[in-house]
Amino acid sequence: WQTAIVSTCTMEAPLQIHSSSSLLPPQPLPFPNLASAPAFPPQSPIIGARNFILRRSGIHPLRRVCKPHIAKFRMSCSGALKSVADSHAECSADMQRFIEVGHKLADAAGQIVLQYFRKRFEIWDKEDLSPVTIADRAAEQAMREIISDYFPSHAIYGEEWGLALPESGAEYVWVLDPIDGTKNFITGKPVFGTLISLVYQGAPVLGMIDQPVLKERWVGVKGKRTLLNGQEISTRPCHTLSSAYLYTTSPHLFVGEAEAAFARVQKRVKVPLYGCDCYAYGLLAAGHVDLVAESGLKPYDFLALVPIVEGAGGVITDWNGHQLKWHPSLEGGTTGYEVIAAGDAEVHQAAIAALAWT
Image (cartoon, rainbow, N blue to C red):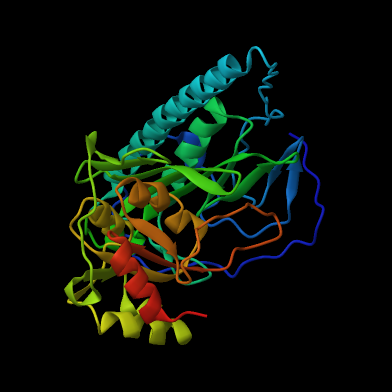
């Protein structure tokens, strides 16, 4: 592997360890190469590794990314219908393979997460003061290695290890959050989840929520009915805010105008509830919750949720009612997104009106 520094190196502030060094460590990692990695990788310049670009240092080099192979369908007038049918069949086969690999990712991450759940381990604070653990980092690295084995031409974007993008770009991007709800995880509350999304040309086409402790897995595919442990699920009807049950991770996460906008919705619903992170969206898709509203989310926090909510009959948009999309960029960090999800289109419109977001 050859590397070349192409921009000025900037270092993040050291992570603050706030757990006792006397704590008993969990079992050894099943990925020995990760154990020797830096515990808290600094922000680095963009590094070119052959034709592969990594946004952060500390990422274990993945296999070389080949240029994407694009199937070409040459359609003549006489064979047009057959070519279209063949194209649909190929797309269906590709999606089935994506789903199968998605399950492998969830299985691998879940195995690591369970190894650390309700065990004693060190907790670090990232630059934004959000907590991170060895379980977060090991789970994401395991998923990255699987993706690079099956789809070397795909890009990968994860919360812990940043963006890995072929120099020529990529139509497909796997977006990963190994533990969405790390605070719940480190306090032993089983309402966190692993989020896995496949984004095609900016739009999420596959999404998974995996809760390994409760053994629950939501799978959403664009244009298909959402499944929970293999069974089709749907949202429930709710026509007014006054009858809605609303979830958000924490009211303390809203600041400024977003805090005022959320308060306008919160005071109109029947019951406001807190906690759950991504698990709240799974509950909404399964018909147990009516609304979820959050602010400042990153792509890895919400892209997996889009096909899950929509495939269950719900609606998920930004606070202006616009579709949620994302395109990867090496220019730097992404801004936060305001997200509103509803099980019923009527209550979604009522929530958008109450937010009055501009």
